[in-house]
Image 1 (cartoon, rainbow, N blue to C red):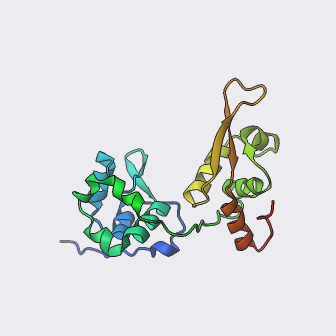
Image 2 (image 1 turned 90 degrees about the horizontal axis):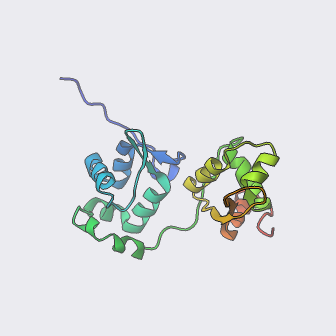
Image 3 (image 1 turned 30 degrees about the vertical axis):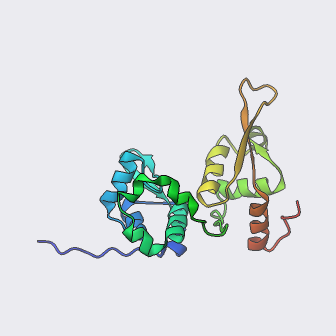
Length: 186
């Protein structure tokens, strides 16, 4: 019989990935991996995974909010019966707004820089030569906790409405504090 090797997990507050696998998520939430799979299957858990093929990826930010709002003892004691009352989870106040900076040189970093200056559409992104992947960059900012906002607008020459992305004022203030610049006043 092969000896089991103990897995080591990065502390949740030091985790830099936008998503994690089921094993890590179960460690952070102090739940069995099968419990998380049941939450995913029944879609009744306090957090929902992203499905990539046959794999489940759990967003780090909701895990942090869940652990902070319920507490580790609450996360450990929260059973299947409590999951039938999802209206109770929003009653807990989440942690303070604390997004993570995107990796240097990434499309998400370019999008964050552009969103500090102005609202952004796919047309703007294409005209500046940055390609077709604006929505992916904005989604990565969302995973990192920036809470970008999106509204549909009609653009000249486009048959259907397109998304216009913007950052909330608290996000602009957070960038100013993190980078030491004065983007908050824009």
